[in-house]
Length: 71
Length: 178
Image 1 (cartoon, rainbow over the protein chains, first blue to last red):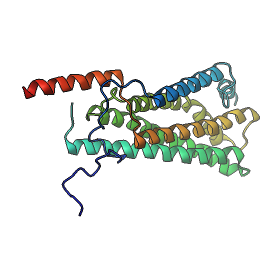
Image 2: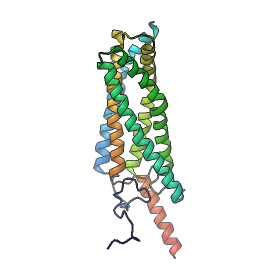
Image 3: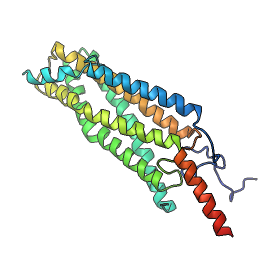
Image 4: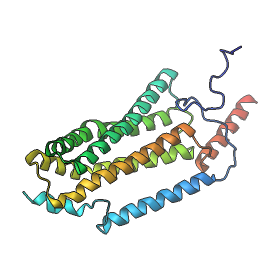
């Protein structure tokens, strides 16, 4: 029988449930996924900035100035 | 600062709606950008770029700002906090970066719409901007999907700050029990 009183989302699996975070260890080190995710993010941002600054961006912003000046 | 359940649900509904709406609007933008770049019909290309400008100013930008604001409010008003969990912190950083990149790309969107409003012929030098619209919105779509995945899976991991806060709260609870 379904217990209507108990927590409907005991494992915190509901993506739209922000009532409380799950229990976490008190002395946990940085998880591997954060290191991998962070590294990928930093690399992508650096590539994005480098491409834009060198004018080799995905489409290029250097066109904007010249295009805007033309009739 | 903890919100009442009613306010928390309102903030969360606003955040989910604006975030998913942002993703959907960017998907529409991508479809229009592809139509504008590859279309053979001049009228369709004009309509695509004019619609892209309108969509960006009236839907995408407001939803991006609302998503950022409601996310911050939802985090601060619950025990998740803004800097306590890695997934929340990463979502915040990515959303701020995505909003900045969006603001930077408003100029080329306006330029293309301006050209589309005046003529049916797109000059060759605008092709790189047309390509920028497709690549930029594709990248934005990937980023927004990543944000959604982070929200749904909520990968484990507490920041150093979060661990200190949790230890302090436990100490307070022990002191109160004595």
